[in-house]
Image (cartoon, rainbow, N blue to C red; front, side):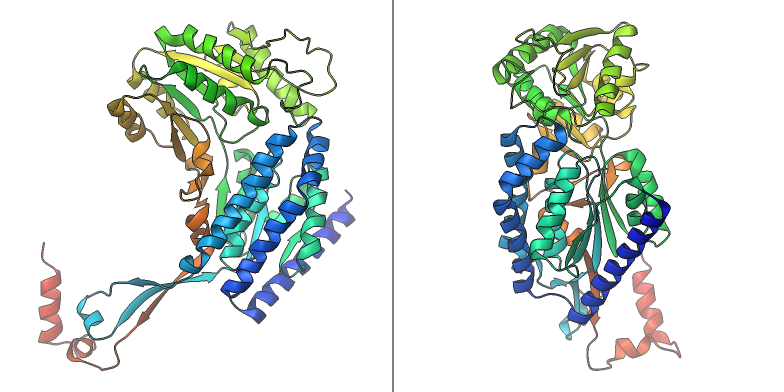
Length: 482
């Protein structure tokens, strides 16, 4: 893209932002009916374009399960929108609070929180679930009464162009606008003076987004990633645990911010887990190479990166277990499929233990005591997700109370993101802020404090004004007690 073209697109984005801000001021906070109408338009888009969404993602990935797309990107987006619709009237109500001191409330003073639209929210969505990670945040953004500008990923161009067409068909540019383009456009987009911005993607890119947003003091929601661990307790059902872990690791070929990134298993259960992992993959994917249910890696550079992790681990002495039930030859294939691969007892000098994998490669480390496993997790960056398998309540509580992560699923992986009544968000390098359900409505709202003073100028109020006398001194003395 030429410098002139980038400049023109940056000017276009500024124009759209100005239009949306002006419309927000002109129209004021949208009514409940208008917000529900916006949510309904989004639901209609997902239903009407579901087949085109599947085809666009197949084109972008080279091979992607149509059923998985319908499950994660289409139905997985309709759910949050319907949840917001069902609860929006309650969410929009003014929230009453107690007055301080409480006696003022007895005389008619009121304290309350009003949830006000912030204005215009910028959405930078990623390539791994490009539709879901655009529409799911929109459920909270539109429910809160905001307008939105969306910058989808350049790594899924067919899907990004389709979303631009979809939104333009039912929303005016003053309501929702999609801007497509490469990293230069993304950089200019992240520097716009939004009233809020949400970015979903890599931690490294988030640093640039945060730096750009800081120029305009734009508040941010960052949904990042990291190395989400699985801790298998000795009391775990290893057959069920392996099936659920491998399902999470092979969904979208592991290209999920919440995919289990490594497993910590009791030393004496290592071979049990490996065997059960092999069995579960064979049931899900008897063949892999041309299986329509098995997704390809999105781009050659990501394929090379993931395969580089495996080769680096092999060169440094790790045991590699490739799960290839039909013993297919992956050196000759139309697309970039990688069979599920276990890396047994990797060391921390291996790249696979230093970077988020984002692919169907799973390191498996052993531990002697659960405290050792907890110590390993805590010695590294706080993850987006943490997964514990086991029936020992005391051990479960020890793991949960001794570690910090964005969220936790017990006896499964990833599933906490599907709970609309739970906040979804990261911590530290895994992100900041959270959304989904009511938490999303509040994340994208300005929580405006409103205090209404009593009408009559009674004694205690007068005593707070000069000249100060015995009344206020008596009050202060009562407050300054241990």
